[in-house]
Length: 291
Length: 130
Image 1 (cartoon, rainbow over the protein chains, first blue to last red):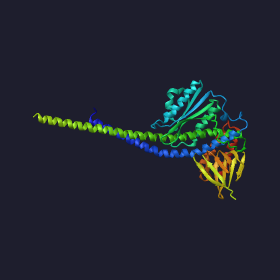
Image 2: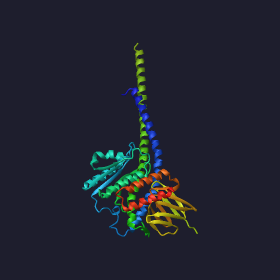
Image 3: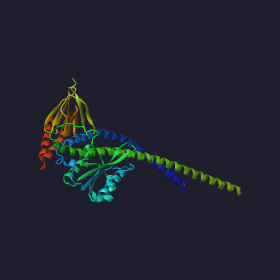
Image 4: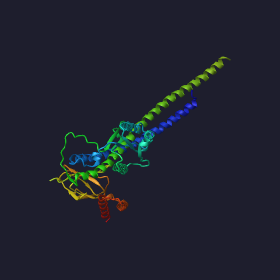
């Protein structure tokens, strides 16, 4: 049985933890709004880009000589997995969910006897994966110290991937990130970016007749590398919104748990105080009786 | 007769402009191109240059370094990761950019295509400065 003093100390320490988690929740809520806005603002760009690529690739006549980014290298021996996570913890299962999803895929790739290469973006993903998959990690990057991640940073990641691809370092590239659905739900996702995922056959195949200047293949050569940066930027934006959402829910839960704990401790404290008083009274009374 | 068509200028971070335009002059990869209503559907990409958009008889000008353009169904979509309104351009920005471009040009392994783009960039920067 802890003494009254110990209980008092514990109550006050839980209370101050509660204050911290509450503050973190508020900060996350404020940041979430901004992150959500920028994720939404970023959507038109990648949507339109996808549209153009879709139109282009459906009208390209010579599929065999098309850009490697579109059709791939013809093999799938080496997989590059780009795992995009946050740089900070204390956001619930956010980082773990991405890593779990990625891990499952890693196992599958290794089971098939294929070569695995990992590129981690964000320090938390690196920390979680380095123990088991350390030897597969060929690149790591984090955005610590950046207040806001802009397109320039995403472009950097994209250029690195393109450089590796041009050096024939891998055949297939997947990215892992959390898609922001709403504050409570974030869905860990994997997306294949090289070669580009075959767009689902449209409900009604719209035959658009476009004029191309210069030729289709030249436009694709310019567009597809750009598309990689765009997809990564989209993933980073979705991730940023998800991170804040996930942190907000996690901190909300923590605050509530701390409240419950304070209530429980207070009851124990009051009970043991009452017990001490009763004990003293009994002692006095029985002392008086014996006189 | 209504002569306007829809113009959307989009960067990865936000929609920069969305509205009606009368005419847009684009620095397309193979030469300048002007777009009016009822243009044929076209997809092309841009070299560094200046986009001139005529919106309600005013000319809005944007400096771009790259981009992709799609015209379809009387909607012109310009996607560019580096687009700045000419009014917002600062001297420092131009200075840095021209220095950067010159550095890149002086490197040995520049392909002809890159050289073409970089030279254009330098020319445009010079043009703006005057």
